[in-house]
Length: 443
Image (cartoon, rainbow, N blue to C red; front, side, top):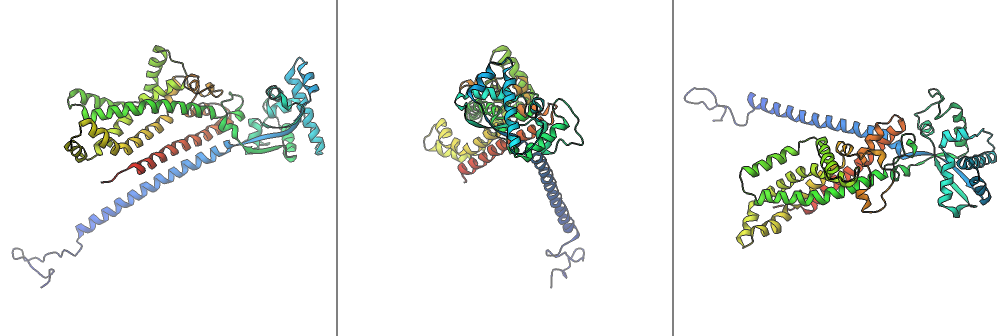
């Protein structure tokens, strides 16, 4: 007699086989399939928007890593320099010498194009001042041929990158339609070309009228010094506070109040920490404004709750048997924590610390309140200690400054700065993953 043919003595109905699928089981299976489909759809949607985001960033930011340069071989004799220095308008004299050299090079190539000082200034800016400064810094180059790679103006750069066209542009003090004939002739002669924009990576902010010369290098240095301050303060303070609260502090209302406030501080908007830093570090303690030292102190306050919470979670994840075994063989409480518990929690602590640093690296609002805006960083600090105290900027503040300016060239530089910032953030997260897997212990 099979299960399907068995009858219960009370009701006389056939019992259901355990191997058969009834309506209720099918309903639960269909619900599970729908839930999996919803999960896959959610992941696919997230990946789609992530691809769209990265595609937009790369398409808008990659042009910032290329620049339009005008390459001219120029030889300045000692007699020409003496004559130029004797003029009343010295930079104009150097500019005339450069224009004469450019005309000579064009004539040698068989290109008959009108070249005047006004057109050169619209294409290159104050080229006379650039040449004079070069020979003042390098007097040994007088009498030798020098290949000048001069960055073209943002309008000329936009012409090569498709932002500016003959049909849509209008004559202005920045560029005229007749200048495009000169640009085309220089391109045909091989004088104008596209090159990798190293000054964008190594340079500093160049002011509101020169997007072609703007660079993010000085801001990268400012962010580096800020991260040194954050790492040097938040890691030891955060780990020490976490060890005390998790391993040594008594469970009472006071410690409960501390834990609640730490959790609340992790959710406080970053601009509040900026106001606190402005009031305490600058107005009360009179620390130097716009300095990476102040920025690091503000970001340390903001990062501490994140590091404390992640460190406490790592300490809790260590099995209690580790502590009991250490205490059972005669170790003190401190020895058990520092010799056994802390090494096992180190991967989680390092991961939380690096994630906290990555969060601090991308903050903008606190830095704006303490004056670390983009135009402050016009050069590299004079030394290591000066890197903490001299006015500087940071990558997110520099990006914000560029995005707020009217020229489209700065908008392009902002997207390029976002790419560099994302590279730093991805690198820090990759390091966190590697460290966690390198030091992780399984039991």
